[in-house]
Image 1 (cartoon, rainbow, N blue to C red):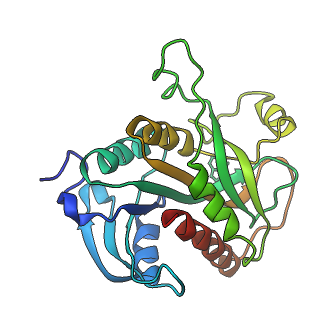
Image 2 (cartoon, rainbow, N blue to C red):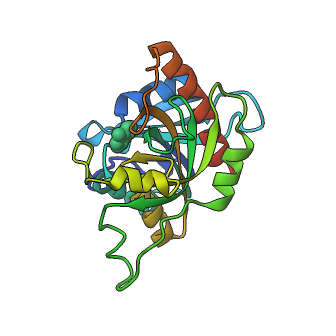
Length: 242
Ligand code: HPA
């Protein structure tokens, strides 16, 4: 079968999919946490793998897929729609990075994106005359939060903003976001949550704070980055099997 952007059979995906932005990260994650991993799609270099979870604990041996989303809301919207609509996927957990906005957040912390504000019009088009609220699946967010505590940094649960621009900054927007308690900025979650709502499926974004936009902080070493990423990954796995 296959779809315009995924060259696989419906049975090639597990009900739960972890979704980093970067295809190489998807490949590294598959090598690290899957057993019997096989490549199921590679259209446009967007790699997708399916195997069984190889980590310790109650979820060991359960089927799990890992597929990249690319960057930005149109990209994740295409893959999430095809996975939910044609491949029997029930839950997608975005595992990515965010720029810190709230002063409560530090580089290396994890953010569970309970809701996602956005500068994008993608959800605005869904229900005419309505400002759509892009919210995560509550059971998945609760499972991620319950798995927190093992990592090096703090874990925050709250609102994030999904931005269309990485470089362009609207004057004053960052300060206003910080004043409204927004934890961090990334570029995919709001669309993912909208697509999940459209299909009656579950979605969550679990983010590692890779840099901070409103306060100075020490940059992480490559080793620290990998350690904190592992922490966020364990929350994402808990959410995937919620
Ligand atoms: N903006 C958008 N996405 C990001 C950022 C940022 O500053 N940092 C990590 N992901």
